[in-house]
Length: 206
Image 1 (cartoon, rainbow, N blue to C red):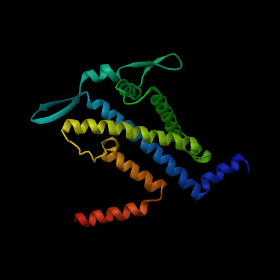
Image 2: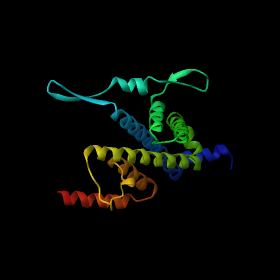
Image 3: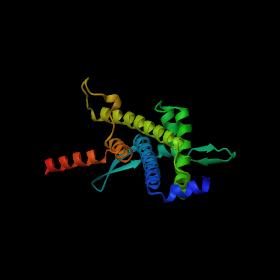
Image 4: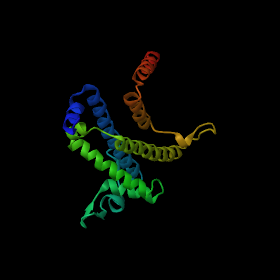
């Protein structure tokens, strides 16, 4: 079977198409959620509050621009440019949350995300492969790692204490739990179980 025929089957075979669309959609969803989470975590430490016309207003201080968003980095072509996402990752690395290797991996993940978004038909024709699965797995691990780090800081600020039986090192935010649940529904075939559980919750709440 030649490559062009395989590509046609990947696009027009319903089972193959659904698998690849699900994979591409979740890859994009998880990366965008990761990017938003990193942005929120870093900006949290530069957040200021003030009362304006009797309302509490939250702003990002000018130090954020100095420390993060205005920094320029040298690209492979020798030119300098701003990359706020990259600057935020450097900020996390400098605080021991992630490592240099994690940043390189995340930039690779972002590059693949961009190719999925801008070349979706080509991606569906060529199909997502084991490399994509590895990238997705690493992205999920890094999401959970940073999410847990920030979750623990947030709980400390709120003054919450946990008993020794509580596994704080594996605690996650509600958003992280939603993302993991979606993964299990889409890729592990657990949709029916989740639907029944949600129906029970809704019935008991009413």
